Image (cartoon, rainbow, N blue to C red):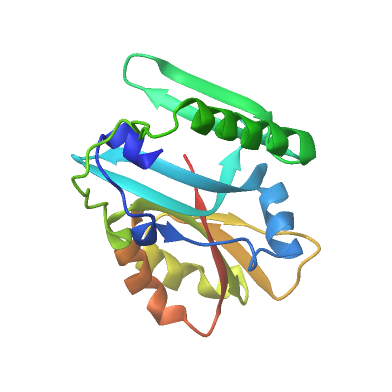
Length: 203
């Protein structure tokens, strides 16, 4: 998809990837308190003349079209400069959808024996945006009490949105303003021993 929208070759090994193995029940409780959902997103977008591509768990607001995609269903959400917002939604797992996709590929290959099918992008390699340059808001879980850490945290991160999950003791969460990941890593380095987890927030 990154190659299709850029018209150039994107090396998948250079794409930042982060799975869901670190997502916990507590993270889901905080997401509920925020009125949000955690989704594993593969994102690709033009940013200031470059292309960003990455895969990671992201917190989505209830208003986001991908918020309610659940179960075996997958969706592709597209934002175009002329098209506006569009979403392609359907079953993405299970024996019948998988069989349909495989059979379709086999039929296409048989119909084009001896020919290479065009993919719609050039062999020119595209340099994708470095992860430290990507801007996000960040949801962070931290040990301690908000009253004791609030002043120090706001001196480091600026304006914060705080969140507490009633069922969880000895910690709290906060959402930062939008900033580059490299800057976030510098700011959070002062709290290495206290940070429990971080999830990116999609606006």
